[in-house]
Length: 302
Image 1 (cartoon, rainbow, N blue to C red):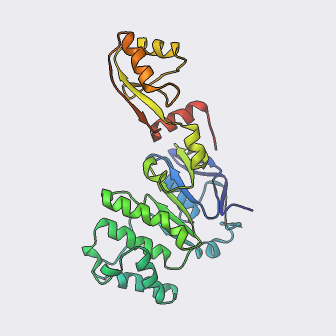
Image 2: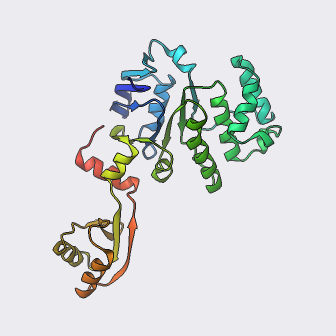
Image 3: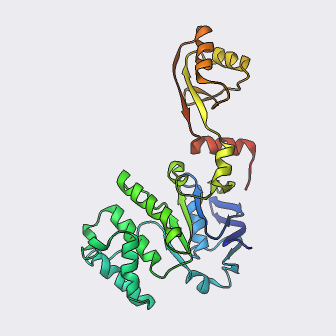
């Protein structure tokens, strides 16, 4: 079965830099696909090309099995999106903002209440949107994107700028969406911790290059948890760890070894017996920075 989204050697070049460099993106139907990368990595440019907002310099895009270049209108009717901040009429209520879109698209009026329930804004629907918090505005923007019952939802940094409570609310909302409707979600983010809590699949992009693509479990296997060792005398400590069969790496002013390769108590005892002061040992998950460097060093491509 063909993927819902497939790109071939998709590129976007500007006069002074290459924003997206020959990426082959593949998003399966029913997935929540997290598109990870730092600011300026090429995430937003890629999403804008998928939505027909930016013309590719080269490459091909297929969505729902059709070529975006020749079936743009029919494809976009089946997509909902939230790119950057939602555009709202500040003097209108949340309900009336949705009403304007519902009338423009000639949709059943019942869809307004349906999406307000989905994004948990029914009780605030009659308030003017200039009174909304940033999180409420984002949820109303998501309601707009869901109004026409899309098959594909594309979100660009949906938690960006939100406070912790807003991030949790948006994360839970996105995670539940495919359970409430037949929907595939493609969302971009620079926060690994957020994406890995909701995504089934992930793509990692840096400097316009797609470094990794696959199920989130495959990413976890490739970047297993580590034991962080805060200690003095790193050179001597690495020699002691090597004698235990552990290949320690430097990072964040500490040493890191694979978690569970040796009991933490045994590692601590050997280092202390060697006269090395150990200040702390604790498990850590791989962060995005480590992934970028290791994927780049390995010369990995999607």
